[in-house]
Image 1: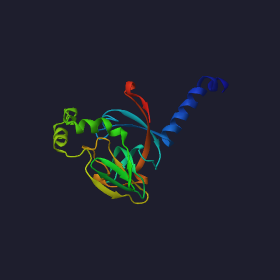
Image 2 (image 1 turned 120 degrees about the vertical axis):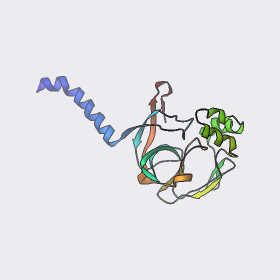
Image 3 (image 1 turned 180 degrees about the horizontal axis):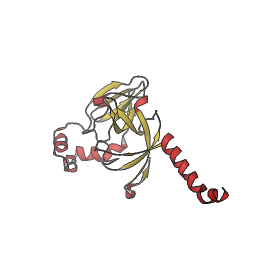
Image 4 (image 1 turned 45 degrees about the horizontal axis):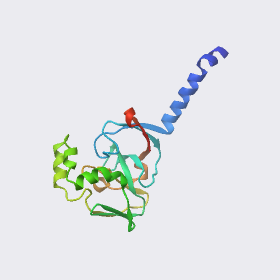
Length: 189
């Protein structure tokens, strides 16, 4: 028995730790689509910490409210009970102006009329960028208790709370904590 523990003990301990972390705490996910560009890109690999709540500006994985079989990656914008408004590309929450620095790259391209070039991979996206008057359409919502309002960073093409509604606590699958692929873009969130 001592020989078995000596030879296999460390391996079994590491394996058990990995299994416990994977089952109860961590989930690997892949980004599919362009709704979080340029923060997260199609095909990138992420590690999420399993949770059912989130803070403002956390990037989370969630079940889409209109199709619970789909998993999406979005950014939390408004918390339960808050009133969120977008007017002329300016976000306010409960009447307070809120900065969104993660939008700067695409918003700058949009205002310069150059975002359509960035969308060269998709003619439909190019058309949307060419015909839009704002990077984020104007809206006003009051978020119900125990729900969240989420948006993709690539506002022109993102399917998010503006379309599928508010996100219940129970639909939140995890908070993105680490981009591990591609290696040259590795980042802790």
